[in-house]
Length: 317
Image (cartoon, rainbow, N blue to C red; front, top):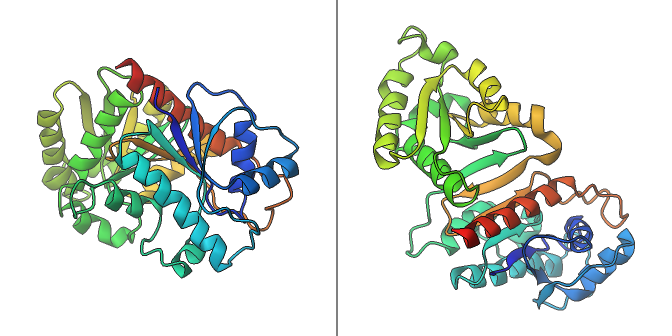
């Protein structure tokens, strides 16, 4: 069974602490940690836990973890690059990443806005980065986003460029099959406007963009049940009650508000469209509490649990 890869994230943040807490527990897949032994040992001592058996890929032999230092910035980039080399070689079943500090990474020469963009570039078989989709997944809701970090005023234009709705639907269906073990996924697609446009009375994006995109997605994934455009203020209630396996939202807050309302503690950031499942906790490095052993590992545990489940599903297929 291929291991699940774990990157330590910023060694001066809470990443090593939540990873150390995770390593003290049993998991359903073998774990391969990309980091430094000294960093993990210090974190385990602070948290008063004893890691169980795990495989360590020692990357930089970092000794002093000073927030914002060039060494710390370089270390977290090196952890990621080491994990991605093994992911490209097919040696990992999934990847779970602890939080990085983007400014520190940038000072170390990191040329990407964040994890997602790096993964899309490094794991692409060509020089063109992969087109990926962001999903927030919790125990009760899974929501994928057709657009992410853009102004609301720009959403209608973005939805018309490059088929992002089809990409989000298809990648959601594929992930529900390959990583969540659902043979016939049920995916609901949100409308953009109130009442899903009310037949064009409140905007024509549903008729002009979303309905045609749904038809193209159905043609590409005939085994899935894809419905919509659905009324946004009702579709999430249906998903919470089990009518749908996932929802595709048109923009950031349309999707993230309901997820964080019902699954805040256990929501996991999942990157779709990569050759392996990547998960991460839905929080940052938390310098203000790092080194105190008080960081709550709930979100990281949920992210690692999802990665291990994807590993088991892939093995069974």
